[in-house]
Image 1: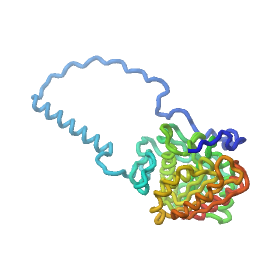
Image 2: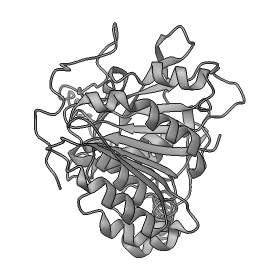
Image 3: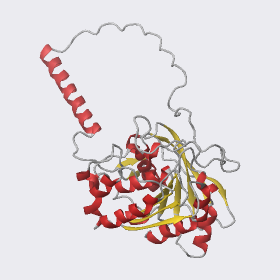
Image 4: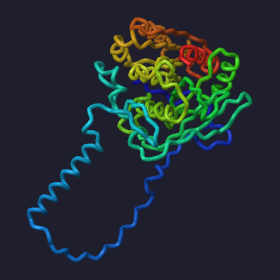
Length: 371
């Protein structure tokens, strides 16, 4: 694991969308009481009821009640089922998501199909995207807020909805998921120019319209891996399942991509390799690839029937993520059966190369995705 320095991308400050509330709420969920609840007053003991049934009938009734209780527990807990099934929240079916540690090599291809989404236990209506602003091109930035079980707090992530998007329309869109770097946040992608760049690429028909989801992880995603506290890898799957439930997405892996910069570049690559059934396109911008060789080796037999398109790049003067690793990692991806490209660009571990090459990366993803 590589620990990113605290100086990564200095100078942004606490940037948020103008006029919007912070994208992340750290307060307890609404159902958690802030103060101790008052204890109920003791009730006077009820007078003892006379026993009217014979002892044999009382014993039979007790046994029947215990049997009913045991059967109810087995059915409600899912013990009676082998494997997981898609769960339903407020009438919407949610695709299962990876909720445990990364699966062993022998079961990577089944890591999605045989686990239950954390969203399955939520007892709350599905959230609706709340528009923040719409630009002149007609695209909208919206915020989705929900109680994340993977993180343990109420999370907000941002969504780009392309020009022409209409809620309730029949059209469905491919989706690009974006993971930020250390001490940054979802809004950093707007600072990079994501909205205007996608507007331009869509209007010139360089790519087809897509939805972009900018995840939020409190700025400290710990390489987007699961930890004893927040489970960041699970959170990525949680957001993907929720997004498919509340937005008109194309849910096949051929229509889903994941990318990120710096620590997010590592996270995007690890999530894509661990959840190969979910993503067909992956990009790492100024990222690194420590300890990912075993995941790639485990996917070798799957890549023949689950094509993966990858692009990795770094800055020539990067002193944080070794830029020499990009070409060698792309070569390793190709040997395993993926379609992978790499590049080195002028610059270091800063926002400047990200801004300069954002259009190229969005074009690569947009053209590789099935619409």
